[in-house]
Length: 405
Image (cartoon, rainbow, N blue to C red; front, side):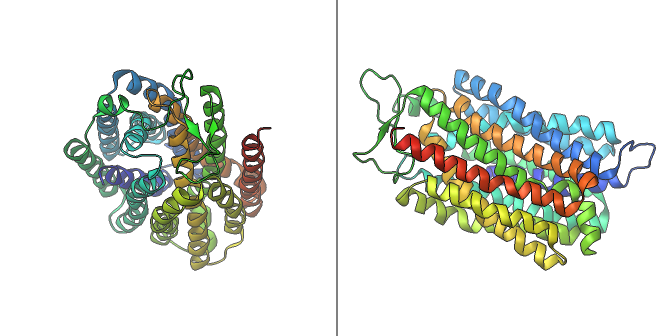
């Protein structure tokens, strides 16, 4: 619930910032609105991606994950409140850099805390519960931003976002224990004699231990984390590509910010509903089949955005994207936590979370650049083709490694 509040803040920015830029005078906005929006939205993800590896290593070294979460949320609160000064394009870009820095401090530490407070047997369920609460904030943020902006403009949206982020700090301090040192002394992943901290993991088998488990060296674990990171990267390109073309999609469908917020939230609400049961199923039947299946489903769901002609169609397509991303995200993050070694959780989990952030940034940038160049429909055809290719490649590589190739 603590991270649900700051997710509410972050998701509001996705809707309100393009509208804020569209309201600037030509003197204050030197670029086309779609290009400016793609830059402002994508720079946030790039900064998060740059900060996370360093933040993960520092949190591991200090063994105080909650402190990094609180620090990052404070930066996010102050930078969100600063939007009340109604900055121009350069000021907006600078504040997004600061916002990205704050959120980047929180992500590896948050994932480390979730990993420390779960076991391999229930980690899919635990990730489902955590991400469902967090995504609830993303579900209602765009809807609230659209409704408030249509009635009162951007300033109340920024004020509410800052208040939500401040609330998140209080909830973290009240409810989240920071007992990393106690948990790290008792790693729940089996350790083989002479192999240091090598985890025993089978990537496609159920989460419970069995006789067919594979012994992965630290290098092999890192390699698999990078493959998962590539899958998250491609997934987020498809999901985030809609954000920077809000103006165009609203014009094509003759809709306003409220309708766009409803369509944007449809993806997240679907994820919230499906993540816990999918996580539980991945604990029972294995992680990899869900990840690959979700990536394959995401392809046609993303391509369909280019041909929708009504708001209800956009909502339906976003729900399909939500189902696909739930199948990728929850089992995928549980698998990443299975692979990460205790003592370096922040650094190793930052591999996947950084890929996630880079995918968000690239998705917004790609759609913002390609749409004016090749058109709306071809852009989503290109973006949608990436996920099935990534799913097939992931299955080929992971299944071969499991067979001993």
